[in-house]
Every structure is written in C-alpha cells, then in structure tokens.
Length: 222
Image (cartoon, rainbow, N blue to C red):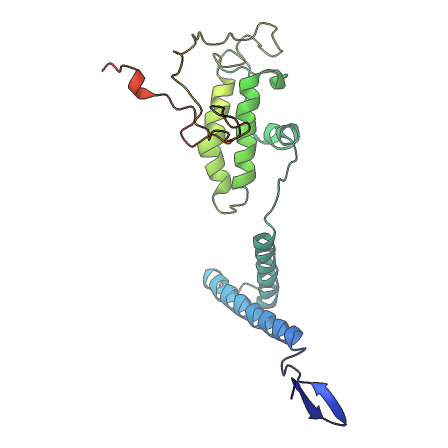
C-alpha cells in the first residue's frame, strides 16, 4: 500500500498533524518573548525609579526596542550619511566647533582640495558610522579616539592647512622629501599565472605580507 490511507469516503494522503500550526507557533513564541522582555525591563526600571513609571507604557517601549534590535540583526544598518560631504556639512561642522582666530589653529574652507584632510575626514566619517551603532559609549569613543586626534592634527597651525589662513592657498604644503627605495625591497607576493610561465597573476589579491620590506636585504643599525 502506498503512502495514502482510507479516510472518509476515499483515499487521501496522510496529513501532517501540525500542518497549518506555523502561524499559531509564531504567535505563541512572539507573545512569550514580549511578555518576558516586558517583565524583565519593567523590573529593571522599577529598581531605578520605583513607582514612578507607567508599567504599561514601559512594556510597550520594551517590545518596540526589542523589535528594532531584531530587525537590525536581520538587516544590519547601512550608512546614515551617504557621502563624506554630507556628513561633514550636516554633522561635523554643526557639532565640532573651534575658533580659528589668532594663530593657534588654522582651517581651509576648501578642505576638499587637501588630500590629507580628505583622508582624515573620511576615516572620521567611517568611524562615526560604525560607532554610532553603540548607543552607550560609541560617541564618547569616537570623540576620544578619533575626532580629538584627527581634528587636532587638521587644525594645527603646522598641519596640512598651513598657509591657508581662512582661505585656500595656492601654495600647499610640500611633500616630505623622499628617495626611491632599493630595487627589490618591496614586492607583492602573488600567485603566479599558470597559463603564462614566469608571469604574475593579473588581478590576483596580494598576500597578507604584500609590500612588506625584505628585511634580510637591509642592514639595521642600533
């Protein structure tokens, strides 16, 4: 006999006894989680401000907060600001304010014409986008470890804006003196292209030690 059984007036396939129970299970799990989250949150907040909180409102806020956290786990948040320019003008300039009167600090209104400034501001923006997701200490860490360091360098009178003095200067800070390194000191360690004897793989990703100097070819003095 096949996988059918006699029921009623004819042959029908054996049915799953839990068929259609999915929505009921999800509803039950959701209800249990909401009750648990609301109860735990209510007790924790009641210890801080006993008798002063609306328990029903607290439960509602707790459930909403849990739903947001679960949504972020399922779909991590993207960038809040889509470009460096947007972040600089809409967040950094209104928040991070310093006087540039006198000679202690210098700034260039055309900051985007200075490669170092763009690089440092880009790193500040990316760090801000990452740390903003930490509601507890993220902003404090950003100011302490990122903004206070990079902005101090950018505003320094001997920094990348030296000579601008309130407006852009056509005489930018010169590059640091540099000579080419000895041939063979830096090499990209890539996998060879099997189709071309002795050739490097085009587009191959460099190994973790790519660009690392070959120390054995260089004498070190103490």
